[in-house]
Image 1 (spheres, rainbow, N blue to C red):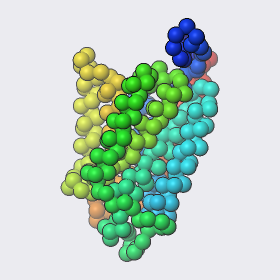
Image 2 (image 1 turned 60 degrees about the vertical axis):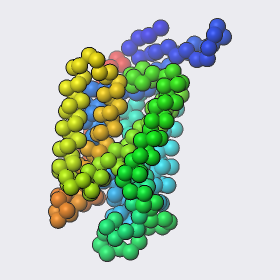
Image 3 (image 1 turned 180 degrees about the horizontal axis):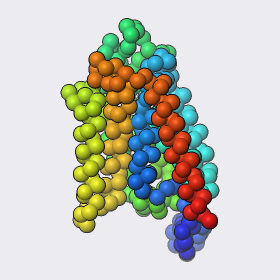
Image 4 (image 1 turned 90 degrees about the vertical axis):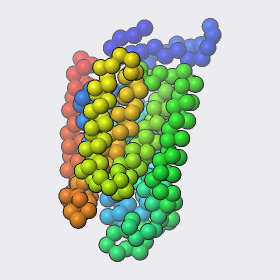
Length: 285
């Protein structure tokens, strides 16, 4: 049984398996979806830096708090009976914000180059693991691949529009959290270590995403694969764009500050979420 909203989930195996109807929980992938994703990931970068660096809470404490917020928002999303744009995009934002500080804590340490305004320490707890971007990225890629392998073995679909079970959605959000953390590492590497700078890094990622859009027209390339690659790449795009907005002009940024940039991006994202909510209600009528 299937209609515009309700899909059938077959649980278990054999003749004793149960059949239950579940409502669509995740959005359609449209141009508006990608605009909101980039807005959320850019806000995740500026908000994560706001808490950890500007407010000097540090990567360790900020990561703990933001990860707990992620768990709360995820619980609300998983308990929801149908797709709700505010619930969904709040989880996306929480994974982006937590991913920012998780990446920073993994890759950075107490070196002076990671501390601003002559600070000697950054918040309570460890300053960071100091693994560096290559090692941090390798670990995150390994974790993300392990999630996708487990996802494949489970038999759950990778197509976002058809993810309708608790197990499938849990795998989806695990992949989202790790991919956003990985994307932050990639973005910070492009901005800080590649020599491209903030604007150059953003242009490189944007160009790569444009290539993916062209590949969508190639029948032999699975769109599901392109979706997940694009999903990962929008995070470094947001990371480099966020750094470009907030970092000092001496480092190639616009020096708009983390607080002002975060407030402006939050207003944009809330407006897009409200629009998505209206569109979703219209689709149900």
